[in-house]
Length: 228
Image 1 (cartoon, helix red, strand yellow):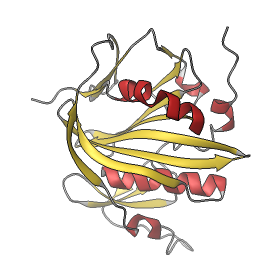
Image 2 (tube, rainbow, N blue to C red; image 1 turned 45 degrees about the vertical axis):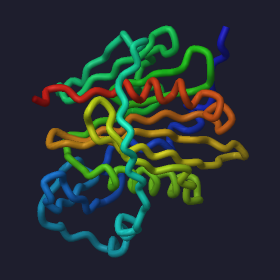
Image 3 (cartoon, one colour; image 1 turned 180 degrees about the vertical axis):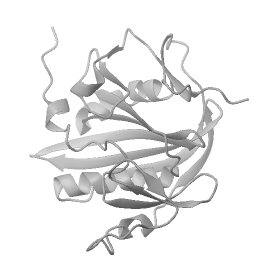
Image 4 (cartoon, one colour; image 1 turned 60 degrees about the horizontal axis):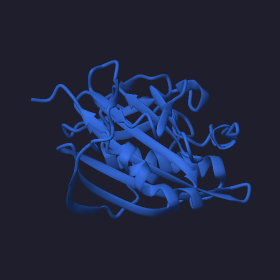
């Protein structure tokens, strides 16, 4: 019988929840418009007045190296179970022999779906936002959130872009340490005119190395719907 995991609860505060985690976030939509997202869930084209916030968003201007791969992936044939996004933007196909659904709020209050591996210590949440934010910006926000909550900037293991089920996906893999334990966060980032999605998995580094293929099988179950 599998023991009750402590990693999800230990790292609950590190995972990025809603995009408005800061007082305001300057972002660029898929259509090229600059917008500002605020911590009350609203956004605007013009920056509102905030005192003492200058320079807070400088991390969004930091360059990152994204490797573009010619590879194209599809959902594994073993992923026969399905959950569908409430806004009809995407669905997740998964193998119920390998993964079980868990109440999303047990892992992250902002999650729409949540999973845990049945035979290893790996967890996953899917967080979607109605605001379209570029994939690279989503990655930078996630990294900054981890840095603020752990006191150290997470190391980027890999940052690649490729197609999954005919959609451009940014995969960001980051290593972060907390209380002497090294964790790996393996995430798919996606955005279109209907909103932004983060499909995040995490585990200890040792577990990630042994289960990377299984983790990728879950992440490759991300399918965008409603696109002709």
